[in-house]
Amino acid sequence: SHPSLEQVVGVYEKVDGSLGIPYMWNNFLHMATKGSFVSEQADVGSELICQDEFLVNRVQFMLQVEKKTPIFEIIYPENRVVVDYANRRELIYIGNVDHETGLINYEEGREEFSQYMDVVKKYDSYENIPEKTEGFVVQFKDGQCAKIKSDWYSNLHRLTVDRDLYKDVLSSMIDDDLNWIKDVKEAEFAKEL
Figure 1 (tube, rainbow, N blue to C red):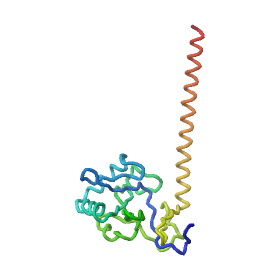
Figure 2 (cartoon, one colour; figure 1 turned 120 degrees about the vertical axis):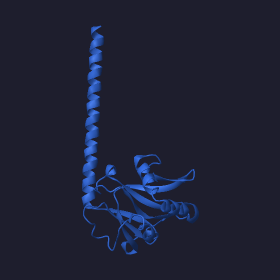
Figure 3 (cartoon, one colour; figure 1 turned 90 degrees about the horizontal axis):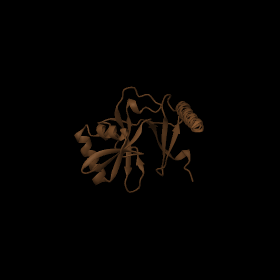
Figure 4 (cartoon, rainbow, N blue to C red; figure 1 turned 60 degrees about the vertical axis):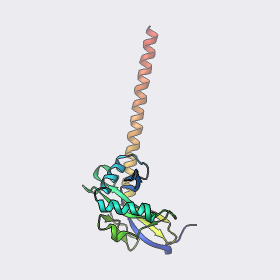
């Protein structure tokens, strides 16, 4: 069953970037994204997290000793989805994932990580999503989370997806037509022989 709105314990900004997940490999800190260990977003995340030696040591300690993984949004101009963050190129701290429970704690680490970077905004209510934002993440007492997308974001994202879909369809049609024309020409040439 789904939790009720009375069980909401936190409302947080949903940043429109790539989810960054730090991990250790060969004694070095790296960043993966939700979808890949090897991507431009993961490379940028790795570069950004490794700029501060104290931050690197703190994250390594969290991963290896505290058994928690801090998670971040990776934002930079070339990775724009819908929201325009201008020339910002940075990590935004979201919260910590507990290795045992798998739950995100949005509160733990906010003050500490705010010394190094922006942290996701916390809101008093989920009723008024600010304009030109992706939306909210609502967390319930049992640790479950739900995303609430803003109408502004949903409408623009749909336009972006539709534009890309139309582009792919038209490109596919052109490729198919060119292949058909080539096949017809080859068939006509074969007849002439």
